[in-house]
Length: 60
Image (cartoon, rainbow, N blue to C red; front, side, top):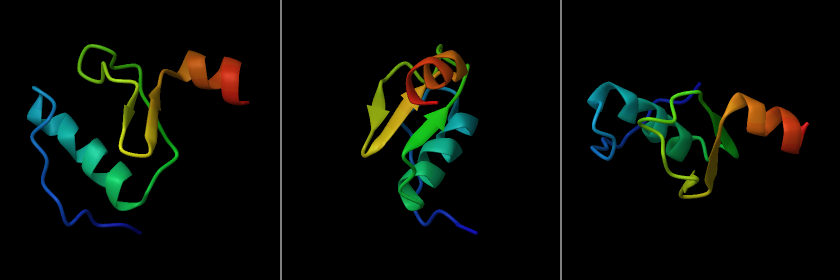
């Protein structure tokens, strides 16, 4: 279990920042989301941000 020790304010919808905080804390390889409106970057730190379709087509 990971509990983020950082607080980010990168994404306009502030409630979505918790996902970047967690990805950073646990050094996630991927953050898979369909929310391309708010997660419009391709990566954050070492975490690649992809849609479910991209993940399925490229990384499965």
